[in-house]
Length: 620
Image (cartoon, rainbow, N blue to C red; front, top):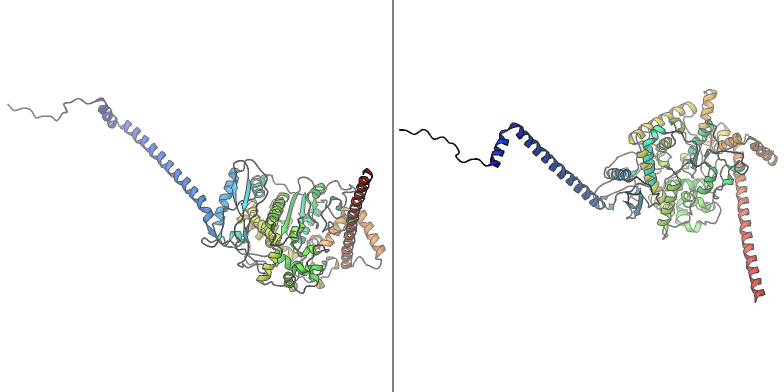
């Protein structure tokens, strides 16, 4: 009998574990759960690995950053005394990262000189100081340390404003010419505390921005400051604001003496309850200015490349003792310490004039041991006292930046160049002359380099690159439109061609200061607006004084007529000469007063010494 076919059946019973696995695998629902768990585990592992890789990469970049090499045309930041703020860690870190990206990215641009000075790069200059940021968790305190000199962009004299590229932003060389693998080192550049504050405030400024009317403008010499003065005069006059004008109808706040509150008309007599704008020449002293201006006052000033400025000053102030006997600027620079005597009146114009205007000692040599320290102190003080520092070489960009900082309109900052020289009085400089100027004005040079860099941080934080290009183009279009409407000749003319003597700028030194003629075919309202745009500094100051203090102005006119009955008021040039003569007389008066005080102190000291000697004799 045949046996039945054997079935392949496992005779041994399954264990409990094997049975559970088999049931789980056979169940579709359980299989899905297992796959889901495995997927989550894989994603978690992948995320952890990616995070570790990013952390490692960031650490490597920060470690390698000090070893990157760049060629920098223009870059210079000094260590500054910073205020401690809370809650800036995230903002500071973001700003530093953005700064590193900017430095690692080449930004080509065109340089437009707005003041008739410089435009092409050279290959000699100074890069000092790179900084590291520390203690960002509790404060934004920046410490700087020096590195070897680098290259700086030197602008060649004689180039005209770059109107060939409408709307293009004239970028400084901190944004340009960065090339890996060259000689100069660049470490992560810190952003000044004042910039971080402006950056944070700008986040909320667009929604809550209100036009500012409490303003102090430190008017520096030969920096296009007369044009800015005109802008401030027009703004204040149209809104009936009160200006802190010089005492006794002077045009300057008794410069070159340190500013004192009683130099302002209406302070001692208390006839003015509130001052809105202070903008005439002075030697800055914050403690005294604060006695006159409200607490919420906005402080700003403007700088110019020291090479261009020195060339202009030499022509304009050719009559000062330091320049008078020299045949050329090179002649003065080659014998500067022999020709320059700091104790002689008005010689301060010849040496570190920017530092002098800001209230610092300008008599420091390029090889002085404490030069870097003094430069750092000056920069820190300026950053603390001023909200904004403009750059003359980028005048249109500066006006847009000022517009945003003050919450003004485009029409408020449009202007024509005032107190500008004729081209025939401009002299191109040789490269070695430029180097001699930078060495002679070493303190000004360092101040300029620092704030030329921070200027572009301000542009990024308050305006932005795209918006800046757009608004610069709009400003230039508005300026061209006004020129076509207001000006007879379409631009500036030599003083001999100016028809209205009341609009002729004061001529001083060897410079030929240009002015404007009004278009005769305009209505009365347009004429009044155009006339304000081209009114020179001295005439406008005289006009504002007459509006604010009509009784005092009448007394001054009467006194002038009594002293000079033969002089006609229509002779504006003669009137301006009397203004300068009056200021010179007042300077002599103040010097005489200070001299008397010194003599009194000396006499008191001698008397005390003599008294002490008698007392000792009597005691013995």
